[in-house]
Image 1 (cartoon, helix red, strand yellow):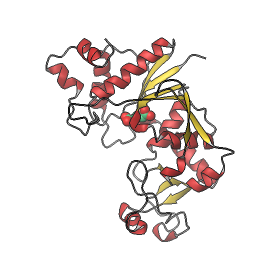
Image 2 (cartoon, helix red, strand yellow; image 1 turned 90 degrees about the vertical axis):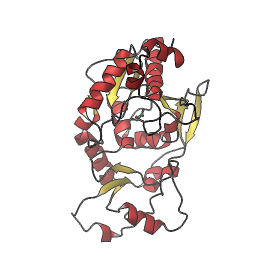
Image 3 (cartoon, protein in one colour; image 1 turned 90 degrees about the horizontal axis):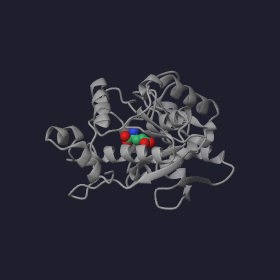
Length: 279
Ligand code: GLU
């Protein structure tokens, strides 16, 4: 079977050096294994992801010297699939409707509530306990959340994933309980990152997920969803994030410089590849 790699940016801002590293690493690993290299736009947040940003993203990647398969999948064209999968989980008693606002969750969780690895309050179970006050039958808007306890109870044994980002391949044990009842379908868009990423990796036949270490812990929830939905598990490679001068993660919300700015300042693509170790 030919390996399949993908670089899956969320086009809600311009690409920076951290993205360039991830894209170049995906392409290099694909080439080394004689595999395919795809780009996928994770544009479910349609209020922030624009056609112009997606066009700029492809132009930046082409400037870096990358080539990928067409057509490029846009997740915003796939909402019906995500909804159908979430509805299937709900029909199996593994997801529930939740109309809680952030304020409702804060109030119900009380002082010093347990938090998920990203720092968000773990869902306190208001709607899963059958408290219907927040969502009288048939009234929206509501999110669909995973019933994590019921979901984990379906597993026949411990969950693992294969990881190659720390040297030799190893099995990492996945503990999805640390994420609690994650949102599968948001109130504002019929999708969520966790659900869309596992469904699309499976649909596109992705065999190797190469992405930043900031998503390492999220892999536990991805493995749980793969198990519930009967999807194959890719091999994961979580790479270190490039640090800027201040030692911060290069991200769209930091002060790090977008690739296009470097380009406008006269930096050559070859210099960037060199600086990132792909000379
Ligand atoms: N869209 C995610 C991001 O830009 C990456 C998702 C993934 O590689 O699984 O952070």
